[in-house]
Length: 157
Image (cartoon, rainbow, N blue to C red; front, side):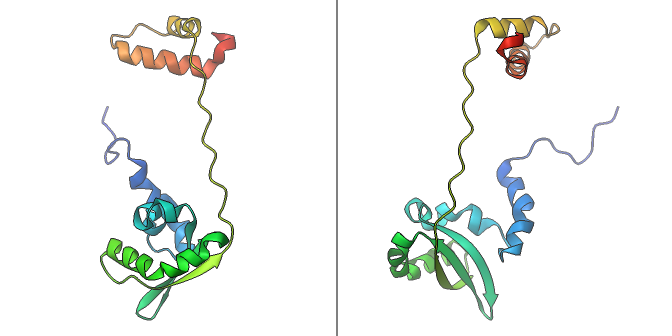
């Protein structure tokens, strides 16, 4: 049997996210997803917590970046606009952004992290492992047993 050609194995999320999100971001004017994905790295964690890039429009020689900012932090960000433009252009290595417009509006609620599942009981793990075929690779067997125990739940194990 021949192996699939061109697959190359699993890919990192950082490699595939720009391609996946690219079309949605292009509709907002972001030709590259970099500015959205790397916003905290570009402007710093403190400013990123109070702002988000909203739209990037190209006009003439440079782009106009619209940033959504919490109203309470808008004055602070207004004073930092020259610094932000320098950071953005320094990150991209050329004068990509010529002007920044601020849009005072609440930021979207942060995503709620997925709940951490409770630890597996030894009985559930043993029951799942008993249903598995004999494998030489003990690490693989343990991983499959943990997966089976999580999928079947404590009631069935």
